[in-house]
Image (cartoon, rainbow, N blue to C red; front, side, top):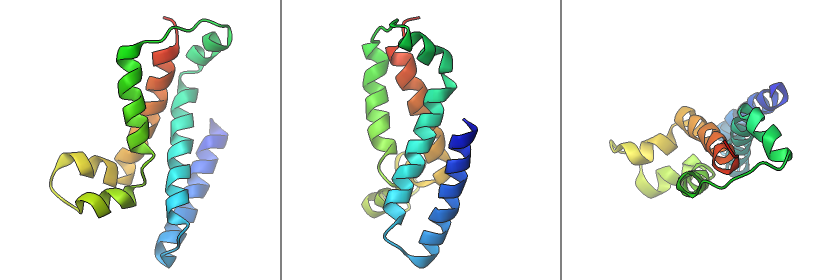
Length: 120
């Protein structure tokens, strides 16, 4: 987990530099940042992962479907949310535009993924 935090911080500084230079690397850095946060969320549920590796799994479809939808939404870079919706007062596009809420939703998607496939 500490390695993922180190990678997220390094990626964040690279992202800030790319944003100042208006580089094309911004898109890949945003997707990579979402991936690190998603994996961090998966590792938070380490007990579920341990039972998953022991072969104890059960699909919870009521949780898996929203998890897949949320996972797709968090891997869309926030630059696209601004292109599609602009900066508006509506809460829906703004929760994906702000980097803090974007990272929280990425971690939540990782946690929900493990919880949707692990037997309780």
